[in-house]
Length: 362
Ligand code: PMP
Image (tube, rainbow, N blue to C red; front, top):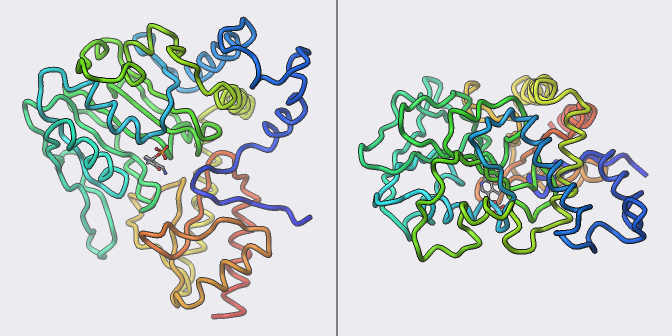
C-alpha cells in the first residue's frame, strides 16, 4: 500500500506509534480482558490513566501549580460560550481580538452573553500581504472582564507568535490548532483552551487550563457541565468524561515526552514549515498571501496560480498518498496541516509532489 500522509486540519493525523499501541491493547487493556473504553471512569485503573495524562500535560507545558487542568466535553466551540459565562463576573463586556475565522466565531457566540468589544487586528503589510497588528496596537477597554484572541487561525493559516503582556487584564486564548507545537509560557494567560483533534488526540475532548483565582465567578444560569469550578472540584469527572479520548490523548502526551518534549517539537515544526513555505515561495505556480511574520507552522494554505487545476491537483495528490489537502470551503485552494504527528518525510513527499505537478501542468 502507498504510504499515506494525512494533511487534515482536524480530526488530524495521530502518531503512528500511538495508534499501533492502542491497537495492540484495544481488546485486552492492562490484562483486564476488556478495553479501556468499557471500564468505569471511576475505576482505579482509569483514574490512573486520567491522572497521568494530566501530569504529563502539565510537565510538557510546565503548567504552574496555581492553574487547573480540565478535560472537558463539547469541543472548542463549547468554550466560546463557557469562557464568557465563567469569566464575566459582574462585567458586561469583554475585549475580543478579531484576527480570522475562529476568533470571529468566538465573538458571535459571546454576543449571546455579553457585549464583546471587537478589535479588528488584521492588517496588510507593505507588500499587501495578510498580517496581524502588533499587540501594542490592540485596543482594550477598562471595564472588560478579559481579552480573547486566537493565536493560530486554522483556516486562514495565520499565527500570532508575539507573547501577550497586558498587565492585569485576563488573557484568554484559543490554542486549538497550535497547543503543544512549541513551548508556551502559560503564566501569561488567565485561561487557555484547545480542542483535542489536532495536536492532542482524537475529537471529543477539550483541554482547559485556567488560573485558580478565575474560578467561582460563573453566572448562576451556567450549566454545571460548563462550570470550571464544578469541573475542577470533580477532577473533570462531574459527568462521564470521554474516556477513550482522554486515554488516547494521554498516550500522545507520553509520545511527545519520548520525542524530547516541546523544544524538540518546535525544531521539527519549524523545519517542516520552512520546507513547505520555501516550496510555495520558490515557484510562481503556488502562492501564499500571509506575511512571513504571521505564517502558521501548523496550517499552510496555498493557492494554485490557475484554480481550474485544483481538482486535478487534489486527485493526483490523493493517488500519491497525500490526503486531505483541500482548503477550507470559506477560502478555497489548498491547505496542508502539519501538526506534531506529521513527519518531515510527509512534508518532503508533498513538496516533491508539488514540484512534479508543476512540471507536468505548469
Ligand atoms: N478554534 C479553532 C482555532 C479551530 O481550529 C476549531 C476547529 N477547527 C475550533 C475553534 C472549533 O473546534 P470544535 O470543532 O472542537 O468545536
